[in-house]
Image 1 (cartoon, rainbow, N blue to C red):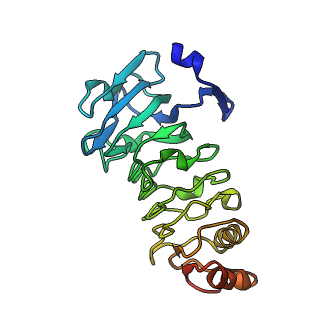
Image 2: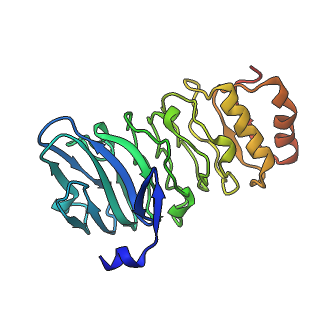
Length: 264
């Protein structure tokens, strides 16, 4: 309770949450239903979990803690708050890539806030197909010093529900969107790419952004003081003819290597 008083709060999606909390939503469909947090490696963990059902706080300090597993007795929608998320190494998972027993991704339906993060979120949301990211807030560079923390972090996600306005993309953005679905996110023009040194974001030949989204991405790279000489891979995404000059300037003036599908 003292931590709640000392830490600032933030309104997100019409509700008040501690600013340092990772906040998301579970929607269960059966009674009872078990969910779990999972890790790979041998991380150092220190967090409390409020599962949103009035059951009180769980303290989690080790990957095998029994308190990382929670049973909801009644089907419904629950807002989970993890705070603070402090993970010294290893990978933090909210998906079957990390938890093959409970498959908690099936029940994760909304990402509300990233909070103040010191963690490695590699493949954290892998295959979380049911998640709604609209309205979510977060500075993705809060994960430092783990500069590769979002590698494949959104792999398999339903990207069309994601609003990137205000997101600060991490230094290593490699494979963030690998095997994603619905490549029509919003808010790209409001995202910050100035820290990125690895732009191989995982758009393979099997997937592509819509032309309007890719146009916004190129415009943002042009308008921002980005790192020069970075390789950006947009798979087979195509750009409008009107963006040809900007794309050429990114290559000539900022030294970017750009892979894409050419003019639409």
